[in-house]
Image (cartoon, rainbow, N blue to C red; front, side, top):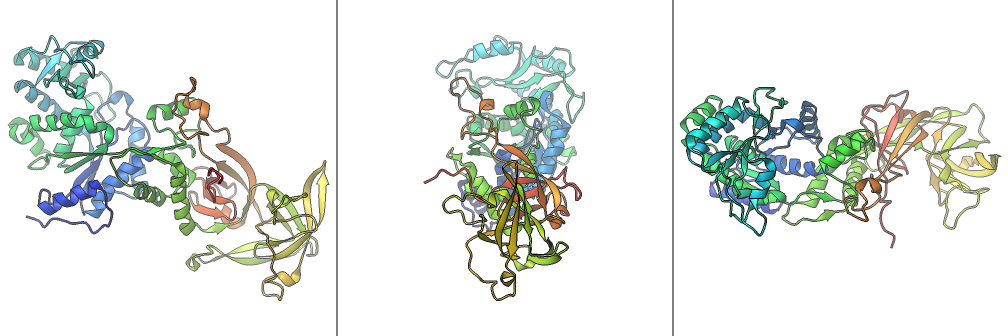
Length: 576
């Protein structure tokens, strides 16, 4: 027997403790988990927690992790979602051991259904969906047995086989488990195992019109793949008895026909008895994560698509410029527990800032431009300055930044009538231009009462290497050389919703009513040439403005487009 693997990771939570104990006891020699999304939509930030947990365990314990598509509902699934999910997992920095689909096992599930019928544990039911609900009972009242529950094994097998061949219309018959209609757990009140759907499947085409229910297929898929720890969110805790019932009663190794079929396809010699473990899902404020609501926002044009940078989808988060490492840090920071809690969006933004502060090179940009002319420099004055790419890390090197007589500065960096505590440029006041020296505003040029240009003089003694370079002055502002600047589209994104709980039912309002009207603003600004030349999907900090990313689809060197990933500080923090 192989030596059990013990992780060296210092992470501590109840799931990792279970895994450590199972390895130490010899119950498992190697951990095997899976990430099992249904391909009926794009993954969102909540899925990132599960991805990081499952694949993280694989890394920490030298285990195996499958990516499995639980594709049992063909009406809502699409190959587009399959490809996007694979891309998202890889973008987060993970690779799966095997790529699987629940649909790979459809014949195995069907044979398992036949076995349950022969064992007297399943029957074909003709009740409609509405009648099934009537018979099921309530939380305080037991259900009633279906009138078709006592059909003979022979009749059930015949009907089940005819269900498979497509003889019956959708919804007319189901295969149901025989468990207990009086159970206090409604999930055990003779749940459906198979239903009829004459719908093409994204993986199997028109081969099947009989599809397994999720709970049944999910449990058996875990067993067939040798999954040791089946990790899911808390809403599946009440489903665990059905999960265990399915694995125990199908009993793959003791079913000769079924086991012969599986062995020919390379399945483990002894399917595992997986242990389902539940943990709290990610709940984060200022967003919604219902696939139905996200789809509605896309269909109604409330956002520009699934990868709209305001969306909580991984595609949207990525396009906004959030690095995968920030999502991994976020997953680590919120941890794993059994306790449901609401995470503040600022925690996520803080992880982005922390990651990008170390990883993002710096560049100069002006979003709301105001012309500044240095009048005591010649009109043809040009020079090239050397700027560090990162003030905290010399390994980032330096870059050439052009400087000329006319500059763009941020309009907010000048006030004609300064407010108390304003330490930037004012009439007849001084400010330091980043990397250049100190200028004094000597004249403002107006058009229709609007200031369009500032005339300033540069103190030559304040330039780098000169005696007055260290002269103390309170304000320092950034700039871009007007002659060399590249016009850029700068998309200023913010939170999609204006309230912490857009799902709340308040006076008949819906989440649509809480969309933040300021969640995106598009500005035409200027960037230094070294910013325009960046490749798409490159994260940077525009000094003093925030963290941005060159758009992965629209950015071009001659027509740059930048998305604001996050501000430098939390602009949503409550004062005081």
